[in-house]
Length: 219
Image 1 (cartoon, rainbow, N blue to C red):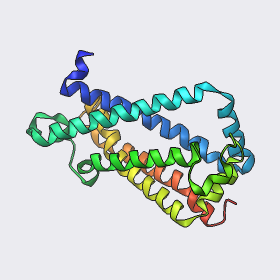
Image 2: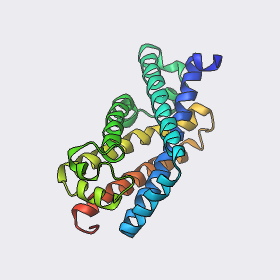
Image 3: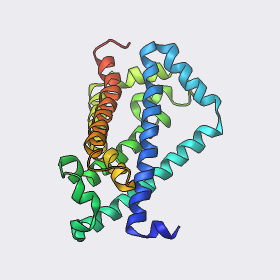
Image 4: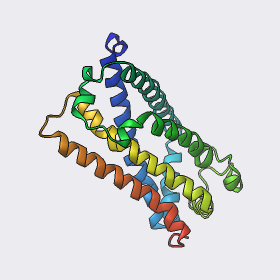
């Protein structure tokens, strides 16, 4: 525990919680993609999750804890990096600065806002567009999602949020390997490229759902 009180420890814990959330993003995308199968696909997926009972909420609370820890340490590290000589930090000397890396704290804040809205939207179902599906657990998830994303504004906000996620991961994935010391001058360009490709896959994968619904391909 003493390690995490140091600057290095905070970076390590931030990196670990970040990558745990990346794994969640992968699993969540795979589950959401069942909507392309049709109503039976995503409804069966939702029914399976519901059958897990309390385990689902334990998992959700764990992910919420990861988000909070990642955010708190992320803010601390950002403050430390802005007030200290960047030469002291390997992450600043070996990784090229770009728009994504310079705005990690802001993309992170936007993602937290989106997560709160997303939970209110499709998990708690308290937003007006899904009011008809409130109390139906899991209910007709296909109908809920298609009804909601048929609204162009909601679909647009969701796609923008996925773009923000993409920007955050452009730097976040490669930063994880840098922070953990699992890279070298030779491997860093490869890791960076893989991280960017994965971030774009998330953007395309998640954004395709509301866009396909708006286009009438999923209906």
